[in-house]
Length: 74
Image (cartoon, rainbow, N blue to C red; front, top):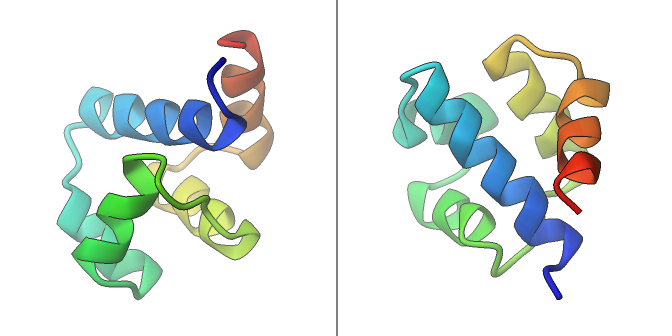
């Protein structure tokens, strides 16, 4: 069974690819290292709430849309 953090990470990876935005640019936007972002995107560690808000801002999409997509994937 896939954990919520893995679904969230998968949706963020997919949206980064759809928008052709880099992981390093997202890490810079969030103020975290690329290593830390990689652990989040791999589902090893969950995103903090503040990071989800930052991701949504970076991807120019509402948090609710991001979360709804992860629920649809469940």
